[in-house]
Image 1: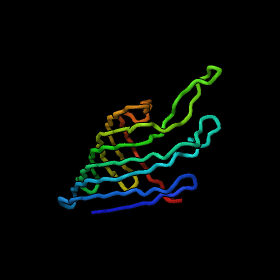
Image 2: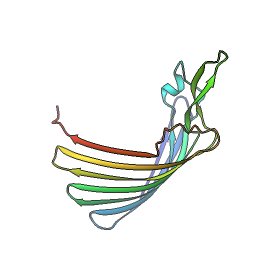
Image 3: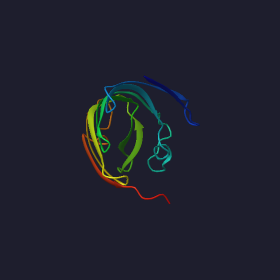
Image 4: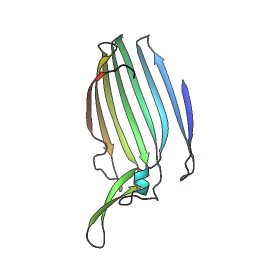
Amino acid sequence: LSLGSRFDDSNLYEGDTTYSAKVGYNFNDNTNMYVSYGTFFNLPDTYALFSKEHGNSGLNPEQGKNIELGFNHKFDDTSVLSAHVFKRDTDEKIQTTWYQDASGNWLSTYENADSTEKAKGFDIQYKKYFSEKWDMNFAYTYTKKEVSGNINDSGYIHKHIIDLGVNYKLNKL
């Protein structure tokens, strides 16, 4: 069992406290499973707030909750497999919106959505170590979004993501 709490404070916003809880079970030294629940609070970035062309200093932070069920298995000292299912709800999602000015020009700015963005899905990850310096990883994520209200469904959360990497660790400088 792991419990957590974090207080975020900013010069621009009132502080907010987020919480997390995680319960795990080890089947053996190589296999475990967990369930976690957490809340989150994401401040708008500087560009979204203050960009001369697109900024909106009236943005509110995104807030939400996430629940996840995960499974991890170590096949041997060189390979690990992980799989997770998740559900995430985001309120006041920060998004880009387009509008036409008085001259008919299309411009964009940032705004908070007035409804909740719901996302759920799963991911699977595999990592293989070939040596102390070489490894590779493969990951696939599927995400299904439910959008309503004025949420901009512009593809910021992709339905399918595939990640393939080969890594080499250099000696320290």
